[in-house]
Image (cartoon, rainbow, N blue to C red):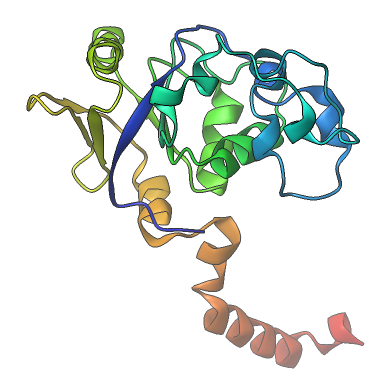
Length: 212
């Protein structure tokens, strides 16, 4: 998992509240047994004019020219900005996988569904909770200039706009540390691998019957 420290990138304004995980990645794509390849299906029902499935190559489908993800001025965006209650609905991890694989490294919103928020950290995506008026300021900034760079400084816990405005955000210290070092839960556990092996060696001596 890539570490997240300080990033500057274009922001894509998804001006919708209550975006659920079925809108982020529709249910027909959950049949895939892989954990990769979901980026082309991000916001599938809004992004394409034709219905899709795993059997249909997305490059053969007609893009919706009015959907924000397809607008040329937002190409290459790495920060997704949305409204309240982003990621609500079912707890599918595929939603975060699709966001990450498309190229978004962070999502900014006034609030997130709890399970989606937690899933973000397992895939190296930073979910940033800002006040509604701060999110509105980002929408206005991007509305005036789609190329306006937004900086997210995880060590300082700030989102900065080109005009110098800075918005502070909170984050759990453990989750922050994992993102800073590019660690998922397994990676964090493996930092203590030698201690775990030492415990197992001692356990075999003191309780050998458990290993017979």
